[in-house]
Length: 105
Image 1: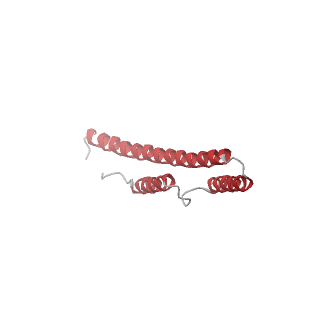
Image 2 (image 1 turned 30 degrees about the vertical axis):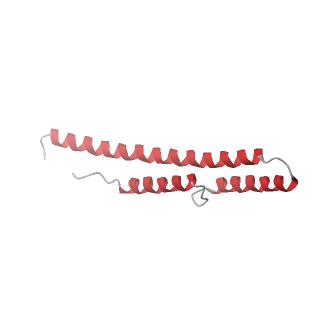
Image 3 (image 1 turned 90 degrees about the vertical axis):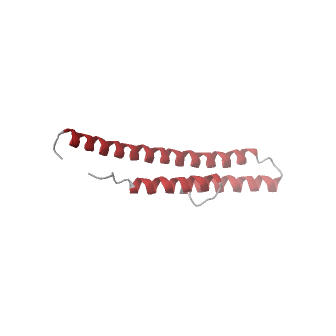
């Protein structure tokens, strides 16, 4: 009985962390389609407001809300992957302990 196979989960965690850092740097590539649309729509609305000489406060809030929602989604994804990885490791440890305690190696 060797180590549990967590490569898939480790890769997912690394990828999600990379995406999270990109979102914090305000890069668009890790965003989902609806998140991209929300940000572009808010930016377009802000641009129109500037052209008309109006306040862009609402559009700015919408952009920040969209970025924070993307960040929250990625943090939740990372947490779920870490919980799943820990479950796999604990399950493998319990199986190994049960096998050793049975006296049958």
